[in-house]
Image (tube, rainbow, N blue to C red; front, top):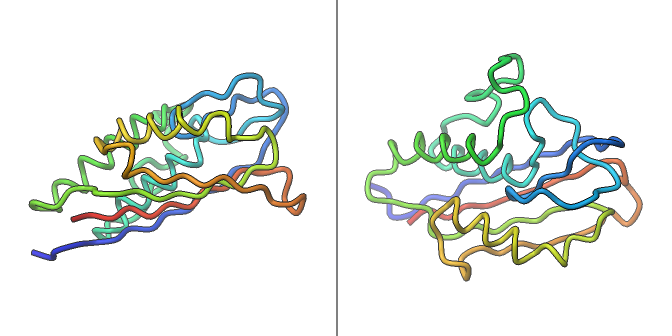
Length: 157
C-alpha cells in the first residue's frame, strides 16, 4: 500500500442574479449573485470532491454525479462529497484524508468574514481537525467578476 497520495481538484461556475451562493457547505447570506449549476453549485466542495477522487484515479464529480441525471438537480454538494469520500475510502486501505488546502477566487462578496464557518464545515465533512483545513480567498482583480472558482488539494496518509 502506498504511504501517501495527493489529489487535486478544480471547479468553476458562472454567477447570476437571484441565485444562492454556497461555499464549503455554507450558504452565504444575501449574495449579490450565485452559482449557475445543475446542483447547488458549491464550487469549493466540487473541487474537494474531485481531489478526493483523483487521488485514487477514480474520475471526477461529473463521472459519478452527471449533470445529465435529473436525480442530481439541485443536489446538496455536501451529500455528493460524502458519497465520493465513501467511494475513495473503498480504495484507500488504511489511508485517510489528512489535510485539505483550497483556494477560492470570487470578487464579491468578500469571503473573509465567512472563513471560520467554511473551514469548520469542510473539517466536519472530511472528519479533520480545523488545523488541517487551509482555505485561501482571492479576487480575480476584476479579470473574471462573473464567476466563482475553487481549487483544492487533499493529502491522504
